[in-house]
Image (cartoon, rainbow, N blue to C red; front, side, top):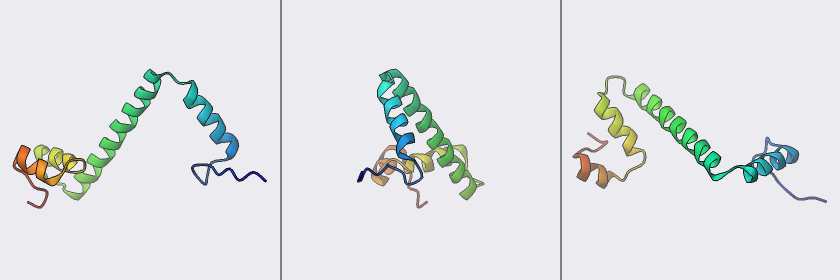
Length: 86
């Protein structure tokens, strides 16, 4: 009995094999392009969520709140004199 389990419960073994094979065939440039697109999309979604929670925030505050999703509070305070608790 094959005990292989896919990385995602809604993906078939056959589909995952195709996906893994395709990733192996990709050049480093292709993988980097996909990574950059995913990173950009993630940032845009995070910013949309911040805008929704803080509709009156200035552009600077939005950017700082976005930075706060990735940076340590002490870094934000030291670099930008800003704390997300303000």
